[in-house]
Length: 314
Image (cartoon, rainbow, N blue to C red):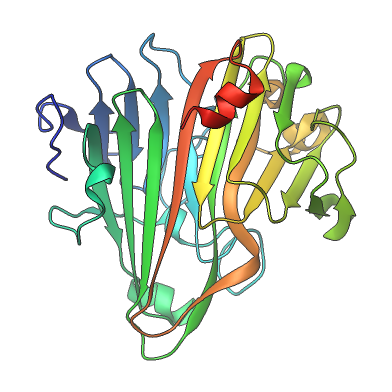
């Protein structure tokens, strides 16, 4: 865990606890009452609440909280792949591994500590991981809760191997929404996307905004740094800002697929939307000794903000 130069005592803003499987979790809090909960299983953010105690992330009521299966919900780390591409499990092994707390990580920029409650996690490959993906790496993840309630995830992946390797990564982010039919995404219009429902065929987005009337499973390419998800009924806008992650994956299973998933409620597709900052289409390649950094920042603000205000919010 880090030592923040915040106006409140950083140590008091952290709490270590355990879930009912005995796996450690870290609870981050800010002075205004917002909180985030991070599980060491998968380095997964399992809760993010605003200063009114409202949960901003979706978790299915049928979630499996038992290792080695990742819980469906929150924000999970998909590495070294997204989907089914190579010889490791779907969405990679990072979300199914036990991470450790790193008390003295290599330093980040001071702005990534100032005024924030944060925890630093570390993942190194186990022997079984090297059998299916034979590359030496160190994956450092900082999860921060800012004084304004924003949630920030910073990933640093270093190649400690003797040869280059390539990987994909996604922050698989399940947002809680009131009704999927009342939600739209702004910022992805006119972009090309790969449609996973059509064998990854490439299309161009034609709408002024993305709305939802059926199953959606797409990867939008070369997306802007900031994307907005508007929930009309709750009058809430999620802002998604990213660095080092050119793609945005958008997923909602809709009715038929929801009923086919054992760990997902039949009607729960109405209350969730996945919008994932990612690097999927073009793999990231690291030479020996090189390090890559990717960053995701999430904000939840009133939808009364005009478009320009939203873009300037960060």
